[in-house]
Image 1: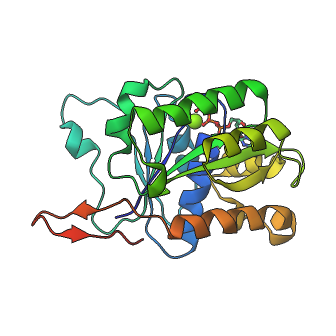
Image 2: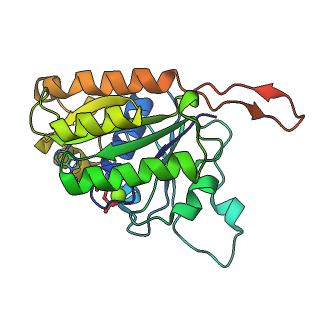
Amino acid sequence: MKRIIVLNPKGGSGKTTIATNLAANFAVAGHHPALMDLDPQGSSMRWLKKRARDRAAVHGIAGFERSVTVTRSWQLRVPSDCSPLIIDTPAAMDPQSLPEMTRGADAVLVPVMPSDIDIHAAARCITDLLLVAKIKRSDERIGIVANRVRSNTLVSHSLTRFLRSLDIPLIATLRDSQNYVRCAESGVGIYELPRWQVRQDLEAWEELMDWLSHRHAPTNRDSNGLVTHNSV
Ligand SMILES: Nc1ncnc2c1ncn2[C@@H]1O[C@H](COP(=O)(O)OP(=O)(O)OP(=O)(O)O)[C@@H](O)[C@H]1O
Ligand SMILES: [Mg+2]
């Protein structure tokens, strides 16, 4: 099973928007995605509740809920026929939780909005991914998604400079668009809105989906200790 985690300790950077849209995209493409919400705000699960039953199915896992009647691993279990697993994480996450959180992840997406405060926060987050979670740059598992960019071509100079200095790829640039607000309100993804309405958004999502399709955790070992590769 492929694992995609969306994280950035900065609140409001677009984690839930990206996680829910990815879930919808994979579902529309015929996969059986699972969407795990680790944020006590429960925004991803709220999105899923709004999703009409006749839409392509997304399996929801409310990972933020604490239950006294079931074990944590039971609560977080992913049905065996589900892939990919998309994980939406909370803001203000403790860097010390990153190693556990990102273990075995095939892709780690960091949404960044092009403002100085957000760029600074993202720089910290990426440094923590490299130094605390010890994800190697050469694994090519970390990707940045610029979010709420006002023009398709004008990602701010400081964002570009920052990315260059860190040597982490910018995978896609999402417009600042009411389309994302509509998606959040009605439990759908960009691909499920009328095509004329999302024409300017599709290219970025295609780039992101394409990048994700080529991500693999370095190696996974199955229960027999054999090295396997994930596939969606
Ligand atoms: N590209 C976009 N264009 C317009 N609105 C957006 C865009 N991305 C996100 N938003 C809106 O910005 C708000 C914050 O986005 P989102 O909830 O995805 O961020 P988050 O990182 O999950 O926040 P939190 O840290 O609180 O969980 C939401 O209301 C969302 O609809
Ligand atoms: Mg969120």
